[in-house]
Image (cartoon, rainbow, N blue to C red; front, top):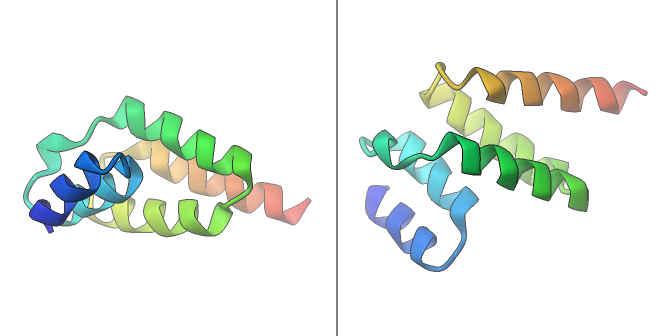
Amino acid sequence: MSFRGVAYQSNKQRLKAYVDFAQSDTRHMMDFNDMNHLIDSVLSKGDTIQVMDALDKITQHCPYYTEGFVLKFRIHMAREQ
């Protein structure tokens, strides 16, 4: 997973890279500030499925990423409106 994450990162697919880094032993490669900006960018395009999938995987393996739980909650609340 970490090698695939590096490949995604070199191809400028950073969100996919962060998901792979979270699922492997290379969590130190994650830049949470950058990840927050990426997630906001993807959300502004309206792709909530990709964001929710990424957040589910990341928060499952990195429960200390509390901002991810907040983002998931915010998405669920927006769906209810």
